[in-house]
Length: 336
Image (cartoon, rainbow, N blue to C red):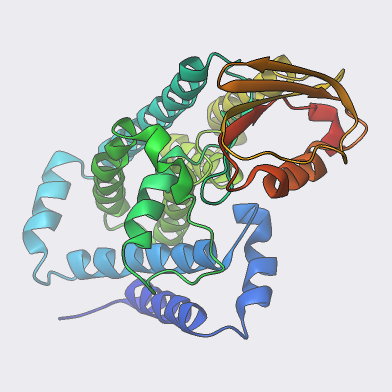
């Protein structure tokens, strides 16, 4: 069974990912390198980046060199000689999955009667955030599964499993669409040039990570999807005008996310809606503007003198293990 240079590169990537998973000396260096791509990079994301990309290159090499996957090569070539039909289906599957993720985000907020444009934090037993701008609804079902296998995920890697009860059963969709996107993405690699396959495997890996962790407006998905658009629309001979459509499409997606950020912005005050609080808390450290008790909800307004990030971290400590969760409006300009 032969393996080409791309397959060899895939093996090296997988082995490197396993080394990072099993040891700790390289963690900080790898996270620093992958931060611009993965935003909020963790050891888990870095390992996924290397193992997923490596697996694409290895399997593509096996298919192209007529190993035991020869029938897959013949089918893929007959259906789409250049792989673009598979790439189109991959893009569609990922977008539909992300749209379902946004609908799940909206449904959580409708359930508790709050604005769709808020951050939700599940605080029992640990704190996990999710929002339409950076969604963890699909990550949570994988996290719940991983938590059932003790030792599978290092303790310092956050799985987001505390969101699980809020997102099932709809979030189980990811168990169908993720494998589908992987398979169609793999078949889209086809037998193109080495550079094309490496770039496509890299882009596919980013979008699959973003699809699970972050959603439509996450950094890895936007970067990966931008590359997929370019690889899909650019033809030979290359002309710069071919970049207009793919760049325009990814800008449209990014600007829609910015539009949501601005639409949900509240620079006047933070409105915090705590649901199902079962232990008292000390709010002495907050500059409270008002408190409104509504049966199983407590609506608190504080000023925005403290940035969102610091406010959230403080609320984690205040409500973790003492309430089911809370929603918070955001001040978009506090991040600048």
